[in-house]
Image (cartoon, rainbow, N blue to C red; front, side):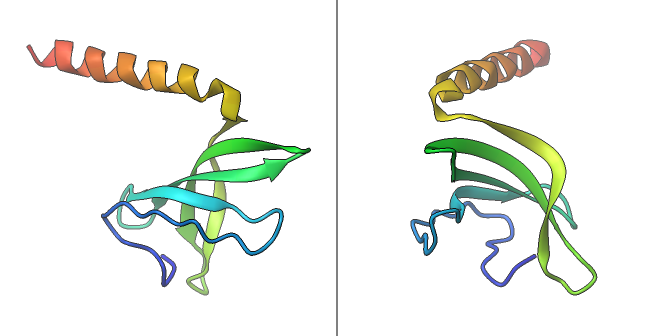
Length: 95
């Protein structure tokens, strides 16, 4: 992963140097080759929230994959509800 990767810990970044640059708000390691990043990115005058999988290329440069989701920030509460439902279902299946 990149030199700024936290490899297993969450990270918060508020650095944004260009208008289209992603603002990474959280990362975690998915497996030995992939990292999941949650980030905000400007799009058509608004902002999109992304949860995407990144993987290093042959030159060890992190590359975005097709795996993930992008949605309007106004839909983040709906995503949080879906996350809560998944966590509840997981807990229910353990008992």
